[in-house]
Length: 544
Ligand code: GLU
Image (spheres, rainbow, N blue to C red):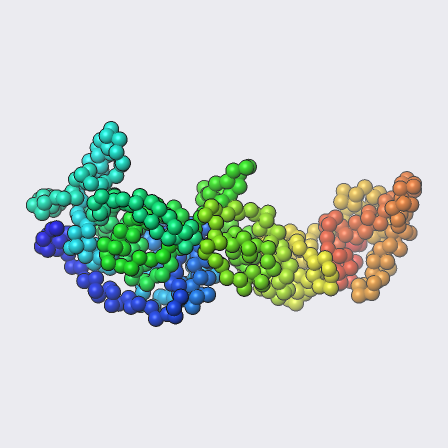
């Protein structure tokens, strides 16, 4: 162990760890309450897998009467990207994963770069207890060690006799300091590691080789502010912030042996772990992790820009987590608790067409006022022109949304996400609608232009706007008959040349002139929402 004056040179002015223990009191929570956290790194990109884990973490905390917070893990300053804070500030409230505690709670600060004093205290304590040591090894020396290990066919890493500063005499450390050499602080892994076992709340009992590497705990003293590595920060933060359950990506499973050693060396109660399998993408018959580089849907930006309603996303992600919830009706599923033991050990597949179906069902059961509010919030952000039109439409917007949604057993399910609204409902807004004024337009399915012109002229002349009466459609039938369309298929089949088409082609004329498309919701309802003048203007357009 190194003498105190040498420790003072390595890490001067450190507060006793007791000070932090007192400033971060144990939480006064009911038995069984979970304290969880979401710990993203500010790399300018929030992965949907992060939202998935965070949603679970928050839900488990809230359901158990506990607490959930967000900790920004910015100890890797080289990877930090500007704008991450703004990105998080938009995404967290959007997905409902913002913290239930902080920023004034005693367990902060919640940004690791603001906690360096705290880490230094605990590193100093590890130096004092002999669980850590300063290491002056250079990059070149490390590379040489690796080469010799490869030649000797032993495990790579900084361990045992390969760890050349592990048992350095104080004089050697003093000399290195006198020379001004930069150093890191490394963990002194226990000698003669064997196998260990631990319980994971998702995967159950896991056995693994214990850690033998002297990992770096505090990065180079050459940095302006030497920050800890993830390993030390995890142990110190999750202990001091009184976390009870660490939910994190399963890439960390292999680090658990080290983390348990660190908790032990620091004298902390070990924390419970739940390692969450990553979200996957299907590629042909195989699957791979949803990738930041290859898959737009890996980023939360995609989900926000496409405008998937958050309730649908939540339902979908919860169904991926616990498949028992996937097929329950929305409310029932939401009332059911998530169970960690039901998470799969292999990652669930994110299937966008499936999400689209769920989302369409979800929107179909939303009250029109909710759809309006969510749609407006989305449009404000992503389609301001549409937002303006929606607002100007006033209460008619609710009538537009409710076309084919009330008093029908075949509820319209064409809003899959807010971004399709413009394309699918745009025709309701005169500003977004282009009149179909060419009687030879191919959307009229080959009906001769003079027939289209005569039909539409007639329609306008005798238009009865009473859409409440079951007779609205009869006027289309009457016109069809008068203008040479067959009212039933049989008659048409018997002598196709005698007709311009069937009722399908006839009502298609009205449909195309009213909506611009051969597919639309019920025409009488559309006509009711548009009002008689607009109906006359549109249907009359090809009349010339
Ligand atoms: N910052 C770490 C990561 O993004 C957090 C892991 C954890 O939750 O402990 O992987």
